[in-house]
Length: 471
Image 1 (cartoon, rainbow, N blue to C red):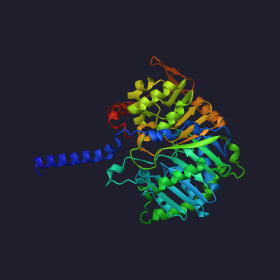
Image 2: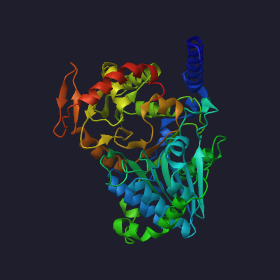
Image 3: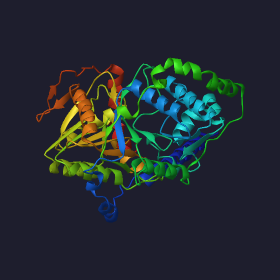
C-alpha cells in the first residue's frame, strides 16, 4: 500500500478512536445538579430518633472477622440470600470460599440471588470455570448490572459499586468490601482497611432499612440494563469445579471453625440503634445528579463536628465549593485519607499530589494515613451519635456516575465503636499544619517512594487532569 494510503488509513483509525472515546465520556461530562424538589424532600432530622428502634447493629473492621461473619450468615440462611457486589474474584482464597459457602446454601434449598457489575463479569467471571460452575447450581440466579457492550459505548462508564449481603429478611451486611483477599480474610500479600455495618432486624417494622435495602436490590435487578449471567459451553474444567463446589464444603468448615460455631450469638454482638437510614444514588447507569453527595453534606452540616474517612479525594469544582460551605458551617471538621506513599489507588494518590494545596485550604484538618494496610473505608462521624458507612468515595465517579450506597446510623453506642477505630487510624497518620508542614503521630509509618512509583506518579500527575472526572 502506498505511504499516502497508509497515512490516510492511520488518520481514519485515530479519528474513529477519538469519536469512540468521546461517545464513552461525553454523556458524563456535565455536572448535573440536585433539583430543588429533591433537596427539599430530604430532612436531616429524619435520620434521627429519640426512641430505640427495632434494628440493632455492629461494625466490622477486621478482615478475618468480616470473612467469618459473611460465612456465618450464609451458613445460617434458611430461605434466601441476596448478594450485591462490585467485584468478586473467584481465583482468590476469599472469593472461592464465598462461592463454596453459597453453593452449600443452595444445595440445602436456599434461593441465591447474586448481582455484580458488568466490568467484573467482563474481566474476571465470564470465562472463569468456578463462576460458570456456580451459575449452574440449582437455586442460583446471577444478574449482571450494566454488562459491557462495546457496540454501545455510551453505556460503558457507569458501574454498580454498592456492596451488601441480605439473609432471610432478618440480617444484612453493608459496606465497602469487595469479595476477594484484599478485603476478606488474611490470605494474599496485601490487605485493605475497610468497614462494614452488620444489622439485625429484631421485629417486623414498616419502613425499616432492611426493607429499603431489599427494594434497592430490586431496582438494580430490574433495571433495563441488567441481564442474566451468560453461561459458556460446558467443559471439563467447569465439571471439575462443579464437583469442587460440593467436595470443598467440609474443608471450608474446618478452615474457618469460628464461622460455623453454632453457639455464636449474633444478637449479642450488636448494639441498639434509634434509626438506620439508607442513602443512595439512583440505580440507573447514567450521569446522575449528586443526590447522595448532597444528602451527606446536608447531614454533616447539621452537626457541630464532622470527621470524614475517605481513601482519596478527586473533587470537581462543584464538590470543592460544597466542601468549603460544609466546613464553614461546622465548628470542627477533619478528613482522614491515604498518604500518597501508601495508598493503593495510584491515580487517586497522584491526583492528591496535584490537588493537595486546594484540599488543605478547604477549612478541615487533613490527616494522611500510612500503616500496614491501605485505607479503603468510606465513613462520616457526625457529633456524637450519627455514623455513616458505605461504598461512596469522595470522587466524581461516586458522586455523579456510579451506583452507591451508605447507611446512616443514629446510635451513640455504635458511634463510639467507629470513633475508636477513627482514633486508632488517626494515631497512624500525620496532620497537615497551616504552614504546610506535618505533625507526625505515634503510629505513622514512614515509607519511601520507590523509583518506579516516583516515575509512575510523575506520569499520572500529567494525565490526571484529563481523566480525573472518570476514574
